[in-house]
Length: 146
Length: 146
Length: 82
Length: 82
Image (cartoon, rainbow over all chains, first blue to last red; front, side, top):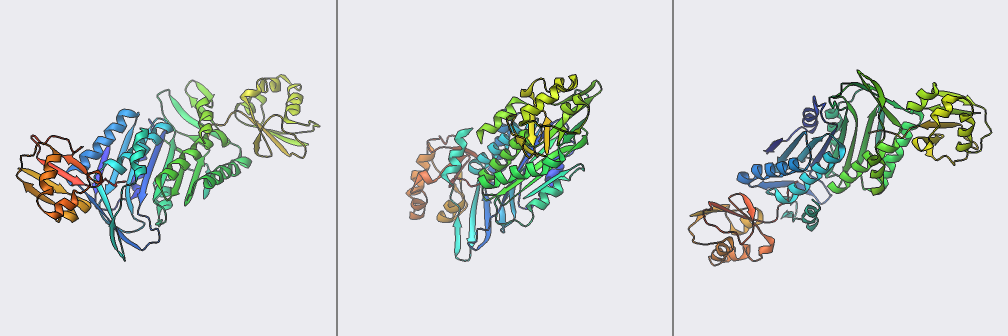
């Protein structure tokens, strides 16, 4: 169980390879990677602000909750903060479990909780100015399925 | 949209890195990797047999079905055949989509269909002999949710 | 003439991966009946059709499927991919 | 004395990321009332509590939460991680 909150980029390929390496006790690995989308509205960069004193413990709590619900061989969460340009990777989660259903469900659970319960805020900067990204009602609703 | 059916190992890290590279139009990448589990019953290797004339077109059909159901930026399916030892990676799928729900759903759909509709058969070889892996009723049932 | 291919334990039970068969069978089920009557190893392989799946010309189908124009029929247990 | 921290547009609207406040507020809601009465920028930031979330000592909580023994209160909009 690993949580890393960092400003630096991460190497998705190297992370997944390291996560998968040498596992013969588990049958399934699921990963999710979030990327800064360029939706053609002139996004110059995205600024991710977070609450340093809270971020790491909040994510560890979410991860521990996932581990209590599913039989996980391991899990990994990396989340960046600071300025990011379109195409850059924002964050990733990886879950390892004996079977695919648990690996998928735990990864979706982690994503749903990170979206609405990890203390990050995103601001989009375009040529026209800047705006905070509003939370989506869908994201809050997604928690009710767990 | 890529399908590769191969005997050779693949490099999960390199595959994910290549799949993710240079994407700024999509916000979410989900990957699934299946691994030969060593459940402590003395598994020496797993033999995967397939139906060469059917495998590639059958998987391409499954992939096209996923592309028709979800807005996917891209998808990748790699499935191995031949002898594999515990800890080796059997197969992977990757999906790229604007949002996380579509990427997760498409990856789960692909896995459910690959389990029951792609022409592969697994045989486990232990010190005691060999046995074909039976299809699980759960795997067939999983298709009914789509 | 039609190519008949077998996979996994069906192949092992029948003892060969592929054979070319002269048949006038109208459907897959008719072909199965012909094969069952050949030898005990075929009867054993086709004893329980619920344990088998069939593809005609590399497309999954069912045992009622017609064979007119078909070039290849494959018999195998439920698939275990992924 | 309690540390009060602000994030995202709450921080921008109030104009500072953190301040130390002398207060006898019994709950988060009481503290919000004190802050609203200070200056219009606070009243603006706290105009709609349904648009805000609060953490006490780095734990998410609600506006009824007691402040006895608390060292840090954080106000921010709904989170947008992931």
